[in-house]
Image (cartoon, rainbow, N blue to C red; front, side, top):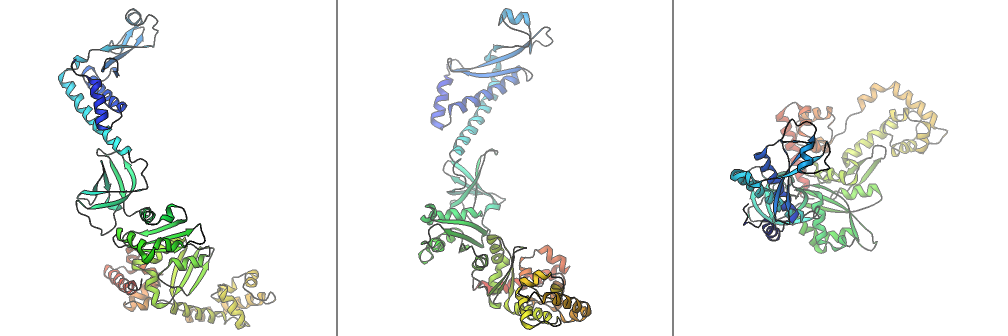
Length: 489
């Protein structure tokens, strides 16, 4: 920095042209010059660099500690010298500062400082750009695809900033090319990397919510609210909505006239299917709506385990489960209930066997057996292990409960072997194109329903079947069955 160079004016010009706060530029220069000064004068020295606005230049100051006996003249100064040269009131332990000659840095040190300054200025400029987006988190940003990295990450130009759409935040099977326009949800601002990226997502559930807000004025006005979203990006999204105004249909608001609004959002999501579900305080009704387009015929509720057994027509089983189990999985996530699906034929056979068992209890009447069945009792063992209060709550005459429990215990001990022979596991796996031995293996492992197989992981199937070929055979059979239902969904 020569005498002819007006550093103060350069700082002001840089701040104005690049939009960088003046304080950030000064801080970057102070840091850079301190680094250069320590390299030249010594890393062990206690140095400080300050910009002096009066002279429009920087000053390098060395601080030394006042001591009685000096062991290192570069970092220590005697009390006598400190009082004579710098401060008559100096005391032991004080820090005495003195200006160093900047010219002594030399050309190499100055060049090093210039390089560091250049990088600091770039960093400050990057931070200033990113600062413009600090209030945009959770909102939609748009730009153009700049390039696609080898690992699949997409670099996006968003105004003066660069965005990063990581592979993990992309919609599966979605393809982009350089120059394509792209939207995404601003998840975070990465200030740690050299480039400084806006991290965006297209797979986040909130991205769907923001897209609907752009299409549905009732959402922005607060007349309609999105209660919850369950999403499998690239396949399906289920949205639970409610209204603060009884006269407004929340489902209709998001769907739009002739499905215009929901189709617009689906188009942005590369054709992802979207189900809009109106909220209901009645939980079975809510679960039934969440399983759309399937139409449940009966729902059994287990409050203690927060589970529901849902019976659907055999022809709608594949629809209810969904491709790779996505429909029932999202319905469970949306409602917070553990949903188990049964085809009507299996439910009917299960009910027939349960009623038959209950009717084996000596002296039980048909109405009593039906009361017990409707209350959730499915076997003689259930009755034998019940309390009198539980049977009374099921509708049994208080004078009969003791006799029924005792008779159930007698029947259980006398005919356990016979009951085991009569009972059989009821399954819907015979709907799949699978060999009988594989079906039996799956049942013995506890996988007795198509629903179980649809949501089971490859690891679980491998453990049950102990054969990679058999796992592939089961996966193919389930996939083919569920594809039949996809035509109805």
